[in-house]
Length: 457
Ligand code: CS2
Image (cartoon, rainbow, N blue to C red; front, side):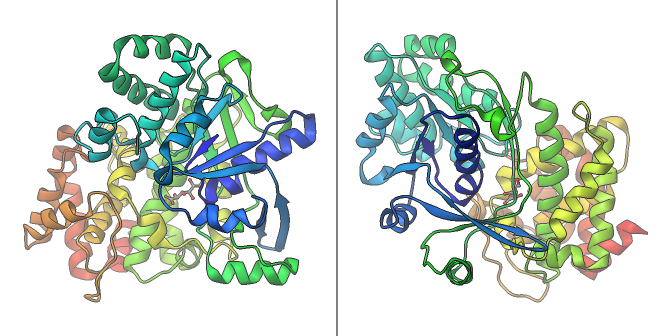
């Protein structure tokens, strides 16, 4: 089963599972679960749960029909049916792409956010709303029936994502029933993963393009780049899993080095380009890096990030950065800066603040990373350089806006936003105060391009 059936997993995990079976057999299938809207189910139902996956290479597009989904459930319509399906012993793996905020944790500490309304609801009611709630309640049903747990396979861009979700599940279970928590701790498996494929949200224009390419209307195709990398810790309950390696997945003992490299070098620069690019009026990442000022900016970011990244065995970080640049520049990938800018409060810690922490500890200046933080601050203030409103999507949007509005000057806004402890740990906030204030002052006074130019000087 898969919780959070968005475009990313349909263009990534589902494709790998299809490849694994094509290469080495097995009769795996996936029941998708949407935790919020019925749109994907409604779109896929009339097409037998199959859909078109479109590889967008600079030199051309390639379509492929993906047929590994068996069913799609919509959790809010019938949470009991979702729990029943998850409790079926035939289900061996529950994978997740619920985005950073879907884990209902505190982004700066990794602990379960017990003030979160969904977590409060789920602790008090048998039928859950949140991903941690579904995992724990379904594991409880399996234990009660005398069945083994499923493997929890998280595929979100969080550091040590398996250990994180394990901690959240155990914390939640502990509050319900400590013996359940003990059982999960002993029997459960939570491999960490690194996932990577750029997959922008599907648009109406994409749907029209796919109809043109294939001659059939597909209500929910997925559009993605050619590149895909999946690294998984090979630790599954009873060893039960598709033959992922046959599909090119790297099965490893410890995914930490891959995860850190990807989160900091890809997602970190993605977020930095999203805020600065958006503020400068660029619609997509490809448009942003086609602008020479931003092309130099992203190189400068990598030079600040790389010294604190430990390369996984056999990987050259400079080659990795070069390949990332080419992926960003792919003109067929229309990945909107606004889309990547979403949920920054949940993304900044692992994407950008970890690099800054390392540089602070090592005594290295990080003007480009500090400018990225300042541009996020400007972005969550909700007004762009031309005085237009920004549609800020973030679970903390209202609070961040109020904090930003509490001060009139860039210095004041930086000080107030650095005080948001859910995002910035106290020590780091103190160390960032001066350099982020310098970046913010330039940003507010002269605009993004000029601020970048000064960082490059
Ligand atoms: C992006 C990611 O939207 C975002 O925040 O940075 O979705 C990114 O495209 C993927 O992690 C690439 O693997």
